[in-house]
Image (cartoon, rainbow, N blue to C red):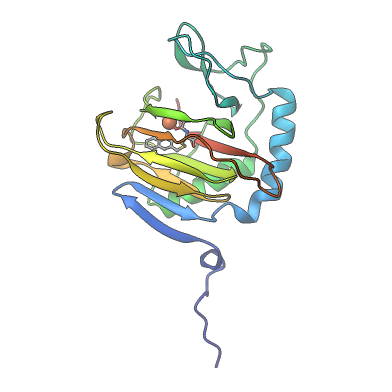
Length: 217
Ligand code: MD3
Ligand code: FE
């Protein structure tokens, strides 16, 4: 008789780790798609290249960004907002590949959020030293919709705080292929990313890419 500990294809590489109510880490969930994801990103970023945006406070973000999907997250000296148009080239953002939306939907379903249909995918590129300070994501219309994030490349320490900026933050290491679903009571918690430590990834080199899927409208 053969012991079959891993009957289900998914459980072979994925490990589910609840962080708190509404937040679940799916370790390695995107690994099977890494090649397709990187190929698709190459095309998307050829149309709408990564750029360092400036915040309303006048700071140049250390994270370089682009988007795909109907809406893209942008910031400039006047505001943070979602826009259908890439302000750098005046065109619509590149379409979100069907398998991106499916991956995000599958992850959300696994975390208990049915029928997640993202219309925005923010692409964040962190080079060594880049960071994202604590903030809330609140430019979306419907906070009952979860957010799905896909980490690629070198590891990062994700900071998961509370409902107040000053609340103590949990430190969650995120590696290549990890997917996190944030919804329910976790949806409006403060979060950020610690300054990236030097490291190298076989496919991405000395950088981390994070894809953040949202339902904006
Ligand atoms: C927890 N990006 O783009 S994604 C962002 O790794 C952002 O690039 C980070 O925060 C990154 O806004 C983290 C994970 C994430 C996204 C939204 C959240 C975590 C969240 C909303 C509520 C709580
Ligand atoms: Fe965020």
